[in-house]
Length: 422
Ligand code: ADP
Ligand code: ASP
Ligand code: MG
Image (tube, rainbow, N blue to C red; front, side, top):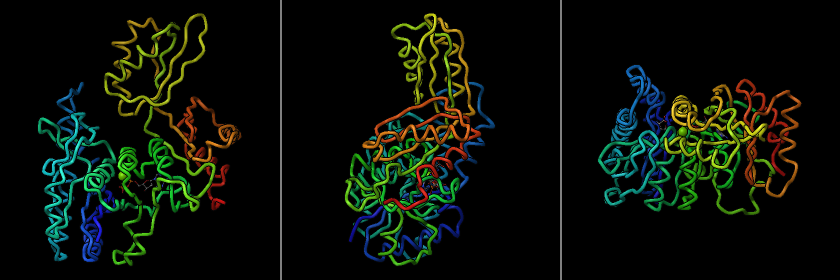
């Protein structure tokens, strides 16, 4: 008997029919003797629908209180899907209970709309599991010290599931979704993409942080920190598929390199359309400039991604960086109102029509010339590179958004990702 956490995404929970299929799959695992905890997302489209309603009523300059209410609102999506799943499990003859984040409680900080989990109390859940109950815990949400409901950022149910698995020291966390594993790139963009049987934790971390939304990045961080065995698999197989077969399907995130792992130099390509570029032009080139600009941005709780500073000309330089598109307007405003006047810079310009494309692979550590192969493949297609950033196991480029699909397909081919790794 094992303690297993299942997570089901929005499409997997998308209708009462789908919820019934999830309930039957979970019941199959429970009847096989496992202690089951299930973390569902809101039904597909629901979080967008709720946030859309808020947008219709949004004040011109939303304050902190607004973000608190957004979380109160968005969290209802997971509350509804969790209760529906509990009802569906009861209809299958199982003892099941659903809890909202605050009832567990899942404690977070107060960074509304992007809160971080600080602790999870496992007492209540363990007591239920001991009586043979299936426990459902809402994904995506928690509660802060003041008792306000928080949410964990888009795609946050993955993180809830892995954090719950870590807190309960679960034997495995299975992320059920609408694709049957982690692919070399998004199979919806490149139909030739190949499913990976295993992917190393480090590669998964880079792929998630570079925009592969199959797993939210924080879920991968949690899995690494607490060594949670993690697998991504399909919720669209027949619910009564053999459990042993199901347990081996999809993609396993591995923590150690073993001889069975695929040894491709580049294992995947990720892309992210959610970023925007901001450039501060004509900045006096003197010590403290990066700090003055980025310090103010960080103080506003905006995460910065790729950064470049050009060489200076006549004592002036240009400074560019990317932020999440959702933070673009407020970062521009902040720079224009608060930072530019004290900086002596000429102007701030922005571009929201960019995207970031990254190649990721542990093999890049020991192979030279991978980045240049990437740049050559892009140049042959006439794609201009605006910014570059690298780490030990990834190279990212910022390009015009309109070339995104072409770039991903070109790189997928250039690195022969459609061919099985040797
Ligand atoms: P869920 O609602 O189950 O959380 P998401 O939509 O958040 O599902 O994530 C699954 C989607 O991630 C897939 O439908 C796929 O389009 C996309 N995706 C992006 N990159 C990859 C990749 N490398 N492998 C598999 N899926 C990917
Ligand atoms: N429902 C939330 C979202 O749409 C969380 C999730 O699906 O993981 O972002
Ligand atoms: Mg998701």
